[in-house]
Length: 532
Ligand code: F6P
Image (cartoon, rainbow, N blue to C red; front, side, top):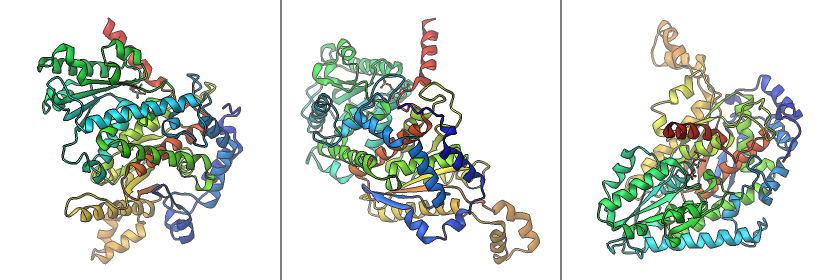
């Protein structure tokens, strides 16, 4: 875990730097090579990654793989999966892959860990099924119809994104047969309006609050929980029945107990799970309620398949490693310091915010493991949102602005929306996603633009007056990620693809992706201001 050299002094780094200073063929040329295109489309675990619109040649790929080797990536992956203390600033392991492992897996976590994980998984899945089957009731004896998740950061973004993506799949709406499934809502923002706008539509007799907080001390979440309790009390809930409406998910179970939560409504996870890696634990409870135990376990299976691939696949076929290396090429060598994430599926509306925390809270660091200032950029600025909406807002900047921005397009190959005309909608999304990747890569030269304008009947003078405005430099790099379809398995695999991309990049930059000291100072000052 202790590379001696700074990343900048690695031979492979200098070689890549030299390569990036040489003039490379434009993507227009690169995309003419069919063999290259074919070799850059990789499939696995219900995903297809198309890297053909990246500014990479065989030489660049070799250079990047040499960088992975020289950074001891293989060893660092081994240490992660052996449960070594990879979170160096907090002296602990990062065992989130253990949350989706099975007893008897070749990766051997300690038996205690596997046993505890399995016990808690079964506990919260059983609870989720009881809620789904309307077996649990509130103070009036009526079953819960609505579940409200109160939490922020990792205690919100992962489950919120997954519920939005998966709660509409046919499998999740089929059962339990005749009864309506509880609706799942999310409130993360401490602004009272955020809570009010959700609860004003709900019946307090049938509303269950899940208070999610690893530390159980996050100011915003505690304030939301206290106002939720107040709302229940003001709406007829007897004080001694309040706890029926409250669930705690936390690594700080003693605090939850002290705060009056019922023992059987406290679900735990552990300090070795970072918030942004916690949806695989009891933090996934809202998702388990939305899709049911079997589907939740499929979600874990998709994640596990990507873990397995990451550990075993050679670099040249390893999807998270390739995504990470190409990201490093764009960020550190082509100087694309911002990275746009553009899903072309409404089901993935919350994917970009989820990824912003995963990437930037993990890798937004300025010092390496030895507290030496980094000499190279770490995480790019991740931004974006639904691509089809972005096209009519900020895509102008992607095409003609002065920044070079790399893009991840994410789409579905097939879509199962039951609306009668849904296939036409899906075709429109697919078409646009392909068109954007192509337009960014190919652009349109001044010469071609002028020719097109002449053909449209404009005079030479008129063309000279406008052609420059309508020219696109192209050569903007993107990856297109296709999910065969949206299922718990493919979503699990997609998320772990990014988790391990982040880990790989951190390994190369020699930074710790598992702490987040950067968020502390502001919290502390807010506390001091409150105490004044
Ligand atoms: O402030 C950042 C952070 O600590 C994240 O890392 C975490 O996901 C979020 O706050 C919520 O923390 P908790 O789950 O402890 O309430």
